[in-house]
Image (tube, rainbow, N blue to C red; front, side, top):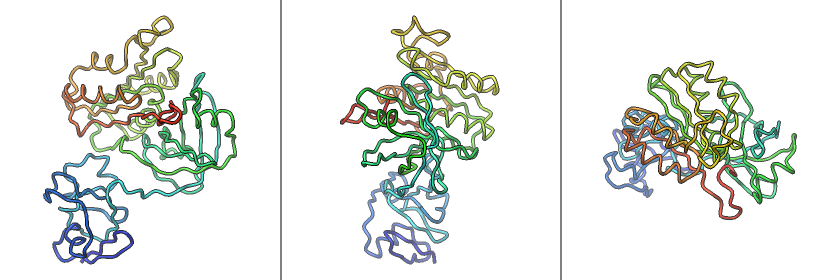
Length: 334
C-alpha cells in the first residue's frame, strides 16, 4: 500500500483508495467537486513519484510531463509526494552573470550560469531577483540539452526599474538569485508530424526562439511557422539567426511582421500585425499546435481567433507578458 506525503506528513493509502480519499480519511481538506476526474478542482502535482495515466486524462501534455494529476481518480501505484496545483515548489538558486550583449537598440541578451543543476523546458520562465529584492519574470530562450547557459532577452524601457538596472549596473561576474522554472508554454514531443504555429510580439520572441529550436532539435517533422511582430522594423531582432534556421530546416518558416505605421522602414518584413498576417496565411488551424507570447491583448485575441479557426483549446499555449503596475514594465520588462 503506497504512502502519500503531503505537507511534510505521511499518509498510508488503503488498497484501491485514491489520493483524495486517502487524504480525506486522514482529516486533510483538499478542494474537490465532481470527483470523477472532469472538473479538475482537485488538481495536484506529484513532486516525487509518477501518477498513473488514468489520473492525467484530459490534461494538457505540458501539465502531464510536470506530473499534474486529478486526486479524485488517482489510485497511486507507488509512493508519491504531492502538492496542490499552484503551490510554489521552487527554491532560490544562485546564478552568475556570464554575459550581456545587445540584440537591438533596446533589447539585451543576458547569459546566466546556475550554481547547481537546473531542470527547465525552453519557453518556461524564471523570476530574477535584484540584490535589493526587486523581482521580475523573464522567459528562457536557451536549450538545456545543448548545455547552454540560461538565456534571457530583456527590453530596456525608459523608467523600467529592472531593465535599466540590468543595462546600466549589472555586470559580468555578478551573483544574483532566480526562482523557477514556471509555466506550461513549452514543446512536448510525441506528435512530431503536428503542424505548429507560433506568434509573438516584442520580446515574446524569447520563449518562441527556445521552443522552435527545441522542437527542431527533437526531430519535429511537421510544419513550424513563426510570426514575430513589431510596431517598427527596429523592434525586430534575431532576424539573421532565424533566417539561418529557416535555410537549415525545410519545415521551418519565419515571418517578421511590422505594423503599418512602420511600413516605410519595414525592409523585407511583411506589413501587418503578426496575428492577422498569420491567420490570413493559415485560415484553417484544425489539428495545429499554437504558441502565443507577448502583448496580452494580442495573446487574448489570437487565442480566441485560433480556437474559432479550428484549433483545440488543449493545443493552444499562451504566455501573455502582463505589465507591472509600478514601472509600466511587462513580464519580460518589455
